[in-house]
Image (cartoon, rainbow over all chains, first blue to last red; front, side, top):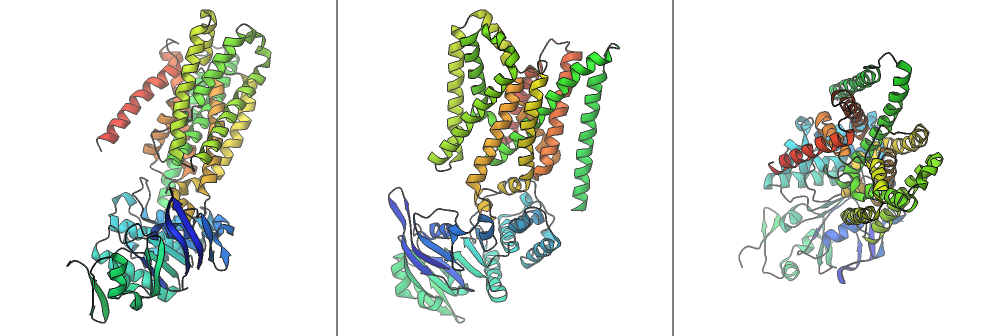
Length: 252
Length: 321
């Protein structure tokens, strides 16, 4: 996935400024950076939720605007922070929507198989027939991920999926994403606020600040004190624990 | 899954039988032995009920899915108010001549529908383009435009000759007794076109329920789709309004009764269910008007009365949640 000279301006403020980026395939890439750095905006443009002002974004060699809506939906999936929807719908039915780009609402045997597989992958087997308005925020988030998974796309983009999740669910979700990359060869791009999650689970990190990409490297290169201090403009301690790097940023 | 399908079939089947039963009762009750006359007269009304009921059901449910609100109805686009203004201006400027236009009723009707559709379509296209696809801006402007058109109509009505005003009133009140047979064919055809489009798109509409972002993610070109839907909705509302006049609360009652009765998200079934429910309500209501209230009230008054109470109750319920 290539991003070439992409910019976006909101009311004369350049939120994303001429970003050039090449994301590695079959890797888990995390976007980090302070609020207002343009991470979510960039992700929205990558997934055509938001029109870009200029520049090109290529996936599998083609610019995203040249794809038909339906074809792109089979290649790339996006999940943004979602609010509760007020619908009478079971978990399985919501996950079934993931098959819409393929079946237009008429589910085939293959669709059903992939839906069950997605439910199982997210550990939702025994919730499958529950109504979605009975679920907790964390459970609903997992259902949405299952829907994205049922969509069976090569690229999965997630915008702060750990919001509203407690530590156990957040870690679980990151493990699921890790498995998607390792077992199924998906390309996962994720916007994260907690750099420790990025440090533990991501292959590569893209650090953004003020609408620009300041670093793009493998995780070990980015999770370093000088880099993070400059990025967040605060004093961050990076320590190593059980072979993984942790950032401590509470003690100023 | 299978169980759900069974209960769906059962629900829709029950609704269907109730609707058919009510229609049969309406057609055959108290005919004073004058079968042919009663059937011709009432059959015509039933056709009108079917067209209006189906048009209102499909348009309201679609509109509510597009706007993600169970409280809005397509009236907010100002189509009713436009109808009011067209009628008022016609009566104001032509007055007596209107009766000479009577043989050209079909033409007047066609022009009526056409003006409404063109106006609302251009409004929708223009605003969605200008407002950066901001749906709520469109609704707000529709509402303001609606009040503006209504005020304009009132202005003309004040200037009018009282006799003509009286006739205008007759023409404006929703009335199923004056349904014209030759108009039924044209509106029926338009109805079938609009309804079959919406029905074909029902799976797409289900996805739209999930919101704009999910819609785009699942491969729907949401802005274009929204525009198409709103245009079809305005055609359906125009048909129903031109045929029987504004029926403000009918769509609201029917859609909300359908949601709470069917507990369903699939538009296929919602459409069928709500069409049947609106038929039951309309024919049942007309039956009450004719045989219980002995024409002392009209169905539009009943709809407004019942609908108003239902709306207040719904709002109260929502508020206390």
